[in-house]
Image 1 (tube, one colour):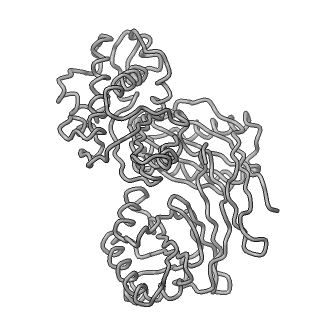
Image 2: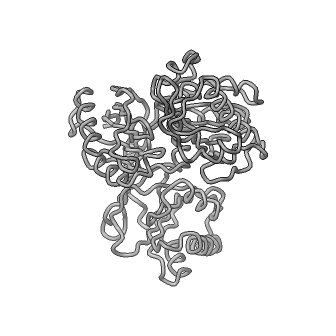
Image 3: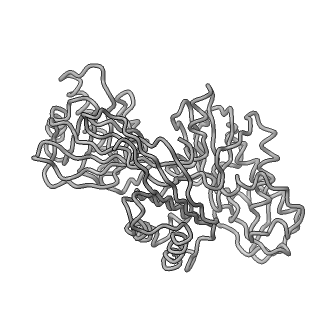
Length: 471
């Protein structure tokens, strides 16, 4: 079969809202009829989109798992699908919800319900990457010379990613979001995030829970918050925006040519500006006012404000089975390691091992073991000297940067798995358990399933790619 359609589900649980998308993905075979099957997603049809719903919480530290499960059942029924219909999917927990005590338990509970799910508790950097892909910023950066910046502003955070020529070159996350200040229609503040207290104090704002604020005062808070973040994005190192940074510091920003604003706040940019406290507090927070101020203030900065492909749903719509492959016959594998599922991939560009590991630890779960697999793309020439140098660099940096993990997975596009694997084992003095697989082609952001070995000489590999609205 050269073409097939599958049903895939994307579930996004955020700080303030959750949503579900059911998509139909068309997979077309791109490999030779005589070779192993390789499929690519060639068409995406949105079959169903849920309403954006408030994320149910039992407390400030715990998600209401029972209510989420009931919501999911209702949405599947509304979409006209059964659990058995779902082939693949992706569950992403984002924002402050990812920090709830039972987030990972819920994540795997949802993923176990059907199909072959890619699951991830998205830390700030992975969330920035996903949002930048979903909004179209990554694709847009391929069409221009400069940097495209996507700011995904939700309920609790603004996850910012910078793309140059299709590559994410920097990320930063700010405590900027619609739910950080919650209020009643009369202006009484019912909640104030502790994360923005230092910034409020530095800017002279006296805001307390129980206080009744005027529309003008609240607008000034939203306006200054927008300016502080935009100042940072424009490279102003003296801005108080550093106090809004999640980790307390702001990296050196690449010059931005175009800015996109996605997320729930990004979706509000097309709305009319609120003119009163009741219009501001329509969702019980100051989100509409923050959106209005962001739109107004962005006009005063040197970057152009571009329209993202998607705002509210700048997230995954599912996961497609991109390819099912068999590794080359020259592999190296420590016994007892396989099978493994849902291992994210980090690409080793220009054989820069340290840089690739730093990116992997920044984006993926650094506490997982292994946190990711390293992929070495095609090399023009492979020599024993190159393998020696590469194995030394891999072992040295992996030991130093990931000291708590003794499992290393390396994928090679060239036919060099056995030689490199043996060199890695030698350089690590047997301390690392190693899987080194060759003749596999993957991309940064893919996820892998590594199956049980076939006759101890080959490994079945399933490559899964997250699917977005745009290609």
